[in-house]
Length: 119
Length: 119
Image (cartoon, each protein chain N blue to C red):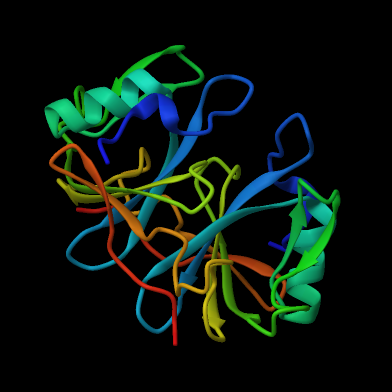
C-alpha cells in the first residue's frame, strides 16, 4: 500500500511526534515533531526534517549546525500517531552537544547527568 | 538534585510523551503519555504507568494483559518535555501482540509490515 503522509493521525496542531534512533547503535537520540509536509520532505530528501514549534518553521536537522540526520528508515506505530526514524546521525543530536538529548537519568530519586558533551 | 515530577514540562492537557525502550536489546517498543501522577507512580512502583487518553484513567501497562513493563531506568530530555523509559518488557508491548508497536516501515514509498504477532 502506498504510504500517504496525510493518512497519519496528527494532533490538534497538525503535528505527530517522531523519535530519532541511531540506526547503528539503537541509541534513542531525540524526539521532535513533524507535520504532514515535514514527513513528506523527510522521505523525499532523506534529510530528517521536523517542524519547529518554537520557530513555526521547517527544521532541517543539522542545516545550521552540520549535525545532519540522514534517514535510514521511517516507521509508524500501530495507532499511526507516532513515528520512528532510524537515522545516521552526524555528531551530536542534542543542542547541548551531547550525542542524545536523554542525558539525565533519575536514580534513587535524584537527577543524574549520565553523558557529557562531545569533544 | 532531587527529581520532582512537577518540574517536567507538560502539554496543555497535562501530559508528557514517554518512549519505552527495551533495556536489553535497545528496541523501541512504544510511545505513550504520562501525567505527573503517572510519572510518580512509575517511579514508586517500578511498574510503568501511563495515562490513557482514550479512557482518561491510569494505565498500568500489563495489568490486564500480563504484558508488564518493569522500569529499569527513567530518563528525561534536555527540554524536560519528553521521557525515555528503559524497561524489561514481558511479552509483546503492542496490542496487536507484536513486540513493538513500530512494525510498519515505509520502503520505496510503500507501507510494509516488518514483524509478526508473537506466537
